[in-house]
Structure formats: structure tokens, C-alpha cells
Length: 137
Image (cartoon, rainbow, N blue to C red):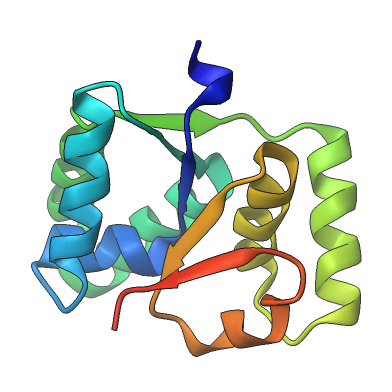
């Protein structure tokens, strides 16, 4: 059952690193390959997806952002909807930790699913007492 599988939560840093072939790509690739073969789950909040898309569009243009979305949709990544409970959890996390609001959604997802956040974003050091973090760098 998928509920028994280890859960890896991708934040925007991890997705951008993977899409751009940057440092950390290998680790993201490994967890994605494990998801393809049913050995784990890989999830991403819709808020983090939105962050990836706006950063890509701002830096590279709309066609590249659309290509990034198409690439992400081909990956074994479960896009998590954002409920009122999730918004409230992320707001609470943001209130007490030095982390970007969008990143708080990755933390909330990891808490809800007992998952590990994959990131290279140093802001996640402030939430290591809340969730497990697997560092890309």
C-alpha cells in the first residue's frame, strides 16, 4: 500500500535543481527512480509547484515555464492539493520559524505524511526539529 512507502517531499529548490541539472540532481533523480518502481512516494505541494513556475517564467520566460510544467507532469510526483488545514499549518510554521511561506507548505506536507524534505535551501535548517531534511548539497 502506498501509505506504507517512504515519502520524499520536494520543495521548489529540489525541483529547480533537478530541472536545471544543478547540484543535487543526482539525489532527486534517485528518489524519482525509486518512485517509478514503487519503492517510495514523491510529493510536492501545489504551492511549491507554483513557486517553481513563477521563478522559471521570471528568469527564462513563459515558454520555458510551460516546458517545466510539462516535464514535471511526466514525473512520478504526486501534486498535493492545498486545503484550509494545510494553509493553517503552513501559516503556523511560518510564524515560528525563519522560512519562506512557500517552503512552509513543504514542511507541512512532510509533517502530515511523515516524510523527508529534499532541499538545498539553508532556510530549512530552522525546521530540522520539525521534520527530517535530506540535503541536496
